[in-house]
Each structure stands twice: as structure tokens, then as C-alpha cells.
Image 1 (cartoon, rainbow over the protein chains, first blue to last red):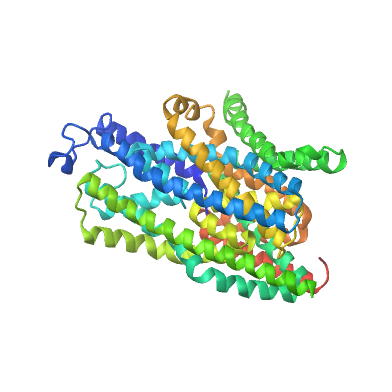
Image 2 (image 1 turned 120 degrees about the vertical axis):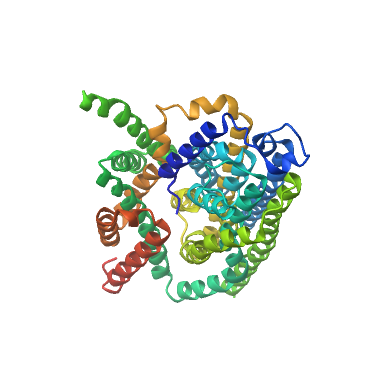
Amino acid sequence: MIYFSQQENRLENYAGRRREKAGGFRPPFCCLERGRNMGNGFMDMANSGMMYLIAGVVVVFVMVMAVVFFIKAYREGVKIGIDKKKMNKAIVSSVTFTIIPSIGILIGVIALSGSLGIPIPWLRLSVIGALHYETMAADVGAQAAGLSGLGDVMTGDAFVTIIFVMTIGIIWGGVFCIFGLKKYQKTLNKVQQKDNRWGTIMFNAMFVGMVCAFIGQGLANTRKGDFTSVIVIVVSALFMALFTWLTEKKGQKWMESFSLSFSMVLGMASAILYQSVILPAIAR
Amino acid sequence: MAKNNNQTKERSFDDQMHWYGRIWTGIAICLMLLVPLFVGVYFQASPSAKGMLIGAASICIIYLPSSIVEVITYAPMLGTGATYLAFVTGNLTNLKIPCCMSAREIVGTEYGTKENEIISTLSVAASSLVTCTVLIIGVLLLAPLRPILEAPVLKPAFDTVVPALFGALGYKYFSKTPMVAVAPFVSMALLCLLVPAAAGQVAILVPISAVISIVVARILYVKKKI
């Protein structure tokens, strides 16, 4: 569902336009003029300690939730006799894998901060968020509040409408989990208990389908003459093949936890090489 | 008898995860809904109810059904505890699901086992904590980090996190089940190349592609080819 590269461009445009329009973020702000924090701009309030506190409470809550689930799962794992080394391996691979995409998400916070300040994008991308969704929802909210879009001069009323719309649109997955997940899981378990091998094949096939959809999406850019995504897909796949070979055939078992992150970083580096070195060289 | 005991335990752990998941997800959603309220009070704003309803309705028309499809599509890949956690922490397709699949692959767990459920939950929880921590550090260090992260030379790299992820995962999964992957890969590639507008609709593409994969896998399974 998330494909933030194109969205980042849009976001940066928004942020850029806003900076230009606001001349360094100083839009007139209706409620401020009614007496609160007189003299401060919208951005001062959107980036104030109170906003960090509001966002921080929710982020901390979600982190506590993750810690609780982590502890519960780890204890249960120990209880049923899963090798601690196995669990630690899963944790190390998850941590190393997550760092690079998280930096990508941080760039999304920076991109959105031009329009909405830092705390709200930080909250939205830490909790349920997904960058492409947030941009669209924020834009819909801005228009519903009577602005021409996210790039327009922000008002307090519009800001609250935007946050409300961003929140209300994204909660449904969680709501459905609360009311429907248990029933759905029971149905799935029945399929699996009936034929466990087919269950395994089916869930793997679902994931293969998801990967295909994203690769197909990457190929679409070639229509516009942009081959960066395809190059990155091929390079990261080649490095994954190399690392798999080293792990499985050459006994480099330590590499297993890092192969996905290394492949991604090298694939991403190929984008820099292509756009900063190869394309300029061809143009010459 | 031992098997029966084991099944009882499995059910109880699963039920526990549902219980915790519901409570924590419910509170998280309530907290999130309180954010616009608190921001409104802080800003002394009085947004029009009509504008909020119009905005909410237009976003919900798209995202309510797609959220349900997402739960249906991704819950089997994640397992109980990880699903609740992933639908609260977000960034599913670009982070949580690949992270979880990769961790299970490395550890070598099988679907439907309790071990699988535990590894998935550990993976998604660890991933969520890392993302939150990176964002907190990033937000705290935003001033010095901004020029580095926004450096034009690095832009192509950060623009291609998702293709890099799915290229690497593509090799991993296609090499394991090439016969299952051919049909969805060709159909998605053709669809995105011939109808570029479709490429922007990942929420629709993923379920379609998943259904094609499952149908192909079923045919191959029935014919005993896989």
C-alpha cells in the first residue's frame, strides 16, 4: 500500500510552495488573532511543546504496546521451549531490516513538516500511518476545510479538520481487527487444520502476489522513461542472490540476518550511481 | 492426550493475544481520536462540522473498504498478535510484513504453528520499536540531520526504498516458487505497463495479484506440481 517515493516529490512541492507562500511560515492565523499567543505564527504553535506532548503521549503509548506484546511473545516462546538463539536471531534481523525503511519514513516526516509542523507528521507516521495515505488525507482535509489544498495558507480550523480527517480515515483497519479478526482467524485456522501444507502454500502465494504487485508498480515508471526503479529492483535482487549463495553454499551463516538490509542498501546505492554518474555521463 | 493439551494451550495463547490486541488497539484508537480534540482546544479552533463530515466521508469511502481488504489480505501473513500491533503501528507493506516474513524465513518456522505466531509478534514488535525510536531520534536531531537526509545526492536512494525492498524479496520468493510467481508477475507487469494509472492503486493491485497467485498455487497444488 505504501509507495512513498513519488509522494515525497509531491510533499516536497507542497512544502516548498508553502515556504514560498508563507515567507518563512508566518501565515495569519485566525484563532491567534483572537488573543492566544499573539505574535506567534501558525508554525510556532504547530511546533510548540504542547503539540509535542500531545503527539508524544500517543507515540509512547504505542511503544508501550509494542513492549508488552514483545515481552508476552518472548515469555511464551521461552515457556514452550523455543531456542532463545532462534528468537534473538529473529529480533536482530527485524531490527537491522527496519533501520533503513525507518529513515525513509523520517524523510516523510520532514516532507510533511513544511505544511503541518513536526509533531503531527511524527505522530501520524509513528501510529498506523503510511506516507502516501497521510498526504492524500491531509489534502482532502484541507479542501474540506475550505482551503485550496495543503499548500494553501493554514488556519487553526483547517489544521484541526485535517488532523481529524487523517485520523478518521486510517483507524478502520484497527477497528476491523477489534471486531472481526478473531472470527476471521478462526475461519483461517479451520482451512489450515484441514490441510496444513495447502495453508502454508496459500499464505506464501499471497505474499508472492504482494511482491509482484509492487514490482509491477516499479516497472510502470519505465513508461515515463525513468528506469531507476527497475535498476534498483534488479540490483537488489542480484545482491540478494549473491548473499543467499554465500549463506547457503559458502557457510556464511552470519550474513543471513543482514542479507535483506545489505541488498536494499546496495540497490538504493545503485539509484545514486545511475542518476548521479551514469545518466550525466550518457547526457554528455 | 499431549496433543490435546498442546492445542488447549495454543488456543489460550491465541485468545490472550486477541484479548490484549483488542484492549490495546481500542485504547490506541481512542487516544488517536482525542488528538484532534486536544489540538482544537489548544488552538482555540472552531472547525465547521460540515467540513469535517465532508472530509471524513470522502476519505472513508476509499479507506474503509480498503482497510478491511488489508486486514483480510495481511492478517494471514502476520498472525494474531502481530496483526493487532501492525494495524496500530502502520507501515504494513513497506515494513512490517516483509520484516515479519524475513524473520520467519531466517528462523525457519511453519505457518499455523505457535512458534510462527511468537516469532511474528517478536518481529513486528521489534520493528515497531525501532521505527518509533528512529523517528524520535530523527525528530530530536532534525536540525543537524535535515541537510544530510535532504541532500540531493541521496534523494534517488531514499526515493527507491520500496523497489529495493521488493527486488530483494522478489528474488527470495520467486526463486523458491517460480511457477507460482510467473502468472502474477506477468499480469502485474503488463497491467502496470499498459495502464499506468493502475500502478498508483496498490491497495487494489495487491489483492488482485494475491488472488491470481493463490489460484495458480491451488492449480499447481491439485496437480501435485508443488
